[in-house]
Length: 463
Image (cartoon, rainbow, N blue to C red; front, side):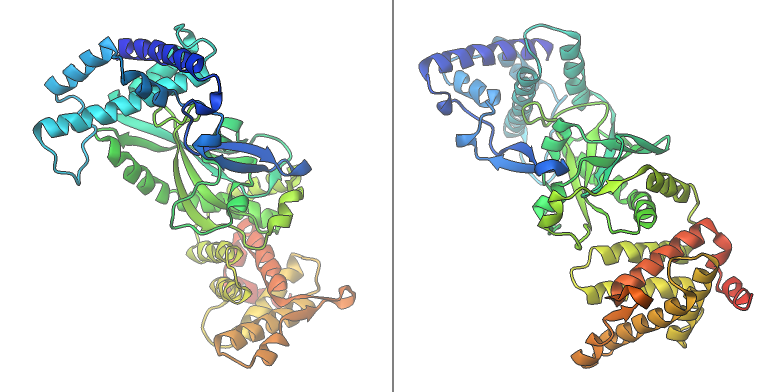
């Protein structure tokens, strides 16, 4: 394989020189299909991506150049590698498509086709990443070893990156623990991820890609079997699904500390001990998605600085260090995050009311009275900027609004409950008030676990 890489690099560069000499206009040289480019939204620093069709692109595809050269020439080591593939079963199972029924020579041909396409992609990557790709520098040896690992290692390992939409920490790295931290996304990873999400996720592409930092989770996607190339994605997807609760905990801590919606949409699996599926100099990522995208924000927000300061990050870390044992607490957090991704306020109101009930109700009777009173008690002992009387009254209005939505009351009746008055501050949306109080209560019960018990709240009611 090493000699196949050496000869392939030389062949690609020599063919490029011939094509360039023949076609003075570089426009006619083969390009990468839909290669991403990146710019920024004014001074906010948030990335904006464009995907350029190959005809207008500027990123030369040396894989396609190799194909053009092979129309009239051959590569000696590649012929020997093809002979080896046809005599050996080494690569057959690795590249076997489970749903296809090829056998014998047809199966060998398919294995050869896939392997050489992979090899051409790696050679293209080497040429784009190295100043002199023919020289076996330390960097080239490292890249080559990562490529060989992609089919030699028995098991693979990935880091997980979850881009934080819109919000930018005031410094580049912040550690929650040894395996979880916030990091700045480098430019190559930015380009590799751009606005890609699975087809099951429907979200604004500009908002998906508007992230400069990400939550990095290490040591959690390991021992991925490398027996078959095409089975990896399913294994990685399964392991990432088991990380959902961990990812949500980090984002919940940030969200509660900030008291503002923030979220994510992409989940990136970044190869750690191997490399393949390159696009020029860009590493091949496995990209998954989850709809935790905050619908509150619009395109106008892309031009605004949304910062996460030191105080907020430290508060989030303090929350993160608490073990979220309570099922009711975890459910309430989940509903808060769900509410941020809702398009309609009505759906978010149902989420928030479910969270309140999980935390502050001990039965289905007298929900409005019990929840508004218990919320007021917590806000008496842990001030939130509103008086306990305002909290009780306005959470009561929130429950009137919730009941009107659930029971299909007249629009005029429902609309009359959509705003609440806050002393001399004027009016705010009932939904906003309810969500803010819920966030404060979540922070309180996480840091003061006794207050998760409604009996404890009731015992302190008259103190």
